[in-house]
Image (cartoon, rainbow, N blue to C red):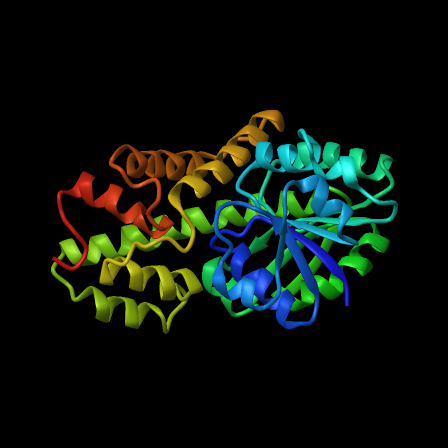
Length: 294
């Protein structure tokens, strides 16, 4: 069993840390207010800084919101790199910019560590059920070292390529997810405005080519009006910003992605930055002056 430093106990990080504790690993985190009672009962301990986490750990996992957060944790004042021991495995499971990930990997490698980018998909439910899809960027040796820990929290684990490749795959994932959520919202809104029973429309679509996990999970959210966050609008905005910034660098047009980003921005402008990303339907409803299920 390993001594793991886990930094980032949010919606996704809390259940992931719990699975690692259940598997017998020893976990330490940075003190941020009151530690989750369930994690404390399982034996997670706290220290004052990311540096102290590194000093106490053989493996470090980060699960924080954005690129600057990862940079601060790893390289800021009292950061991980200041306490990094030779050979320490650093697994970043956040969703951040691929180019910066490559730079972070080089700094960790130059300091004697092994870096792995391993962003995830599957939302809160996937984290709770240890069924996440994990997209890995690493050396072959880094992947083999990281896989036993990833197996504890994930179900589909794919080594995409070298450093940054996992994050590139995650950006692609977020493009597909955003556009599919928008498509489901538009379809249900159309059916509702035309007077059809949207619950029965969704049920029928689930048996045809339009079937998808997003139609299943997020379509139900739209119909039942349950927008408590599994994955927040503002975090999907962040991921689509990465996609659009990358597209400019690649001289690539992503018109659907840009449109989805504008709809998320409309949600945020109406107080919905912390809605679940299924809340994109609310932006479309405002344009239509009609609510799904009315």
